[in-house]
Structure formats: structure tokens, C-alpha cells
Length: 416
Image (cartoon, rainbow, N blue to C red; front, side):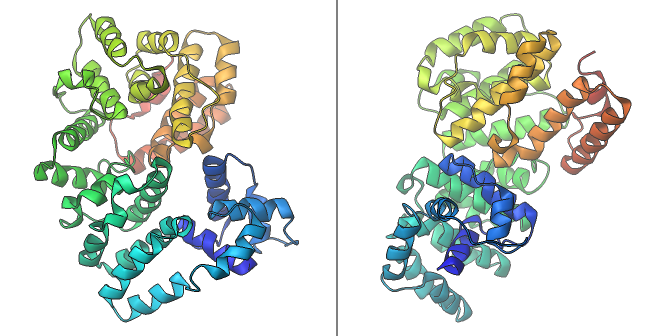
């Protein structure tokens, strides 16, 4: 059963466990999903990548919970009795025979076993991407089983993040998928890949925008492309400013539209716009969502007045349990680090530096946030050698993302 548990974990993260980085991914994912700690070194021993010992009960319980069971005992008792079907063995046979009918039926069957479904779908999509079988992927995403509303928000994030990582390795701008509403909602809108705006994700955005699916998706596409232009230092354009007050739009989209509004307008009534915005969206539980993109905008534009406004306006609940909101809270901490560094308030700066945690960064923002964090670290570094090492990492990442906005001057002069 230990080997079966290993296979289920690999299916859940959609990759084989062969190196330290794979073990760190599992450790971080467990923290995000279960809010429980299990070190990457423990996982290395579990997979035999370092001198192994018999896993203890707590380790087995946590890993079993990660794949959808209450504990290891529940896993032992229930896994063999799940309709006596080995989904993965069966899907291998169906894929080998290119039996589309059998594959579709397996997806429908797997949906009835929710603790396995996400891992199963990610595994299947990985195989289809490898074969470039986009017509079958399109058929699968059109199933009711892949309807965004059939998932909890956490399930949708797991699905979108997992497939998003696969697409980074095998990017596609396939026209079938980019007009498939379930693919768009489950993957494209969930894994907003800030590391690839000048790559496959930007190309997808341009194609989906031309498809004109609905107002909200069109606004999202326009916002992504405008933000890409900002990072590429192209002229600023106005989108639909009134949309920031909509209560029907996704809160994060509202914050993205407001961020672009503030970037595009060099005017003196920013505080009035912000006051109106937060008065309309005054529901406290969503305040962090309605502010999310403003945190990054304030940092990028060195708008310390906006940072101060957000710090005074937002009273965040640090006991947030929903792991996607931990990403948002982490972004707030990052902005506070910049503000209090600039304000020379060392105790507050150190407080938020302790609270900031890379494991709570949204996966699709990870490299983008790392670049921003390097700017902060450079500003706080004391020795020339430390500054050299940070600059080296910053330069490597900025070349990878290829956004002209992140220039050498941006790093060197930020806190001057």
C-alpha cells in the first residue's frame, strides 16, 4: 500500500518524484492544502531518495489526507474497494488503444470518486498534451464533469495550477481549447501566468479576446494585455473605468482594473477613486480580494502614498484558513515590507519580513514575486557581496521573463 500511496501522490502533483525539488513541491502543497507541516527531507526518505526509515504514523496520515483520505488507516481500508477499478491502469490501456469512447467514460466514472478526480484528470491531460491530442482534450473539457461550477474553489485551484504547470512545459495556443469555456474557466482564468505574458499565456489571451466570449472574460483579457504593455513599457491605454465598481465582476478582476486605472491616470483624485471603490466594495470578508492587484501596483510604481492608504484601510484577518487567500495576505505583507523599509520603520519592516513566506505565493506569480522580492532584499543588503548575489539572481530572472520594466536601474535605485 505504501507504493500505491506514492503513486497517488505523484498523480496528484502530476509529476514523478525524482529529486529534491519534487519533494519540496509536495511539502509546499501539503502546507497550502492541509495547513500541516511535513518537511521535504521526510518526503525524500519516504520516496527512498535519501537513506530511508520506516515512515511514522503521522507522516502516513498526512500523506493519506493529501490524496483525499481521513488518515492512513482509512486509505488502507477504502482504496482497494473503490469499485475494484484501477483507474490509472485502465486509462493506460484506453490511451494505448486510442479508445476515445472508453476515455470519456472513465472521466465520467472518475468524477464519482472526487478524492481521486483531480489527480486523475491532471494525469490524463499530461498524457494527451504529450501526444498533442487536442481534439480529445477539447471533448473532455466540454464534459459536465469539467464544468467550473462542479468544483469547490480549492479543487478548481488545484486543477488549474496543476494543468497550468504542464502548459508551461508544453505551451499550446490550440484554437479548440481557447474557445472551450470549461478550459478557460478551469485553467486559463485560474492559472494567471505572470511569468509568461510575453510567451504562451499572452498569446492565449490575444486569441481568447478575439473570441469575445462574454463581457467579464473580455475585460479580463484586456486587463492582462494592458498590464503586459505596462511591463513592456508601451503607451498606457484606458480600459472601462466604471467596471471597477461592478458587484457582479470577480473581486480580483475589479482590483486589476482599478490598478490599471491608477497606472493610466496621472491625476490628483486617486484618493477619491479609492474611497469610492472601497465604499462600494465594503464587505469586509472580501476586502483582501478587492485589493489584491493593488499591492503589486503600489510596489511597481513606487506609490508609497497608495501603500500607506491600503495599510490604513485594510485590516486583514491573519487567521485566514482558505489557502488561496493566504496568497493574497502574503502579497500584502510584501507591500508592507517595501513601505516600512521606505519609511525607515525598522520594527514594522522586520515584522512583515518575518510574515512573508515564499510557500504562500501564488504558483503562477512565483517568478514575478521573486523578482520584486529581490528588489527589497537588495535594498536591505549591507555587504557588497550580498548585493552582488542578489543582483545576479535578479538579472537572471528578468532575462527569463523579458519585461523591460524590470531594468537594472529599477533594482539599484528603488529606495534612493
